[in-house]
Amino acid sequence: MFPDVANPLPTEEVRRRMRTGTLLGVIDLVGRPESVQLARQFASSRLGEGHPALEDVILLTSEVVTNAITHSNSRDGGKVTVVMVECHEYIHVNVSDAGADTAPRLRTDANGENGRGLVLVDALSRDWGVREDAGRRTVFFEVAYDFRQAPAHLRQSAMRRTAERAARTVTESAAVGWKAPDDAPAAGCHATEAERWVE
Image (cartoon, rainbow, N blue to C red; front, side):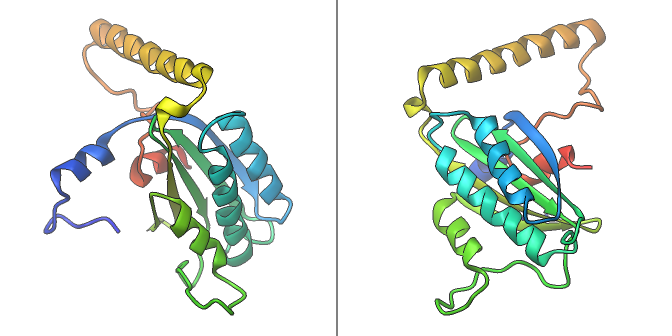
């Protein structure tokens, strides 16, 4: 999924993965079936009515959370964390759980009863993948949308958040010298950065 140092990413890919976005929210769920509806409500409330990516993000969040509470070690009451980041041309979502003995994989067997959720993720997302780290597993996906097609109130609020954050960064940098605050990392528009919000 992520190339190693011996195989560096192309320049455009590096730029894409370096972009920062706006953290829309983080929610910890209990690994039980009723949490799927809570995940759907979380995605809906974070994006808001009229967002061009709303339906796909709700559907894919639901599918990945269902997989986490069905197949991971977070089932039966464990912790499942959902992180959502607005990247102004796509929505990045991480779903982290306690991992399992087997990794999630795309199944192409039309008659199989399991694995269909990732078929949807693969079909509807611009990118997705799985990352294992320190006993946690994260499945991420990105849903692209045309920012120009978003309702005006969504474009204005996104631009305002970006402008306010830029102004705050300039003010803080001038006051104390450039230093990224340790307790508030920028939400990145890729799996590694967004995972920094998950404890």
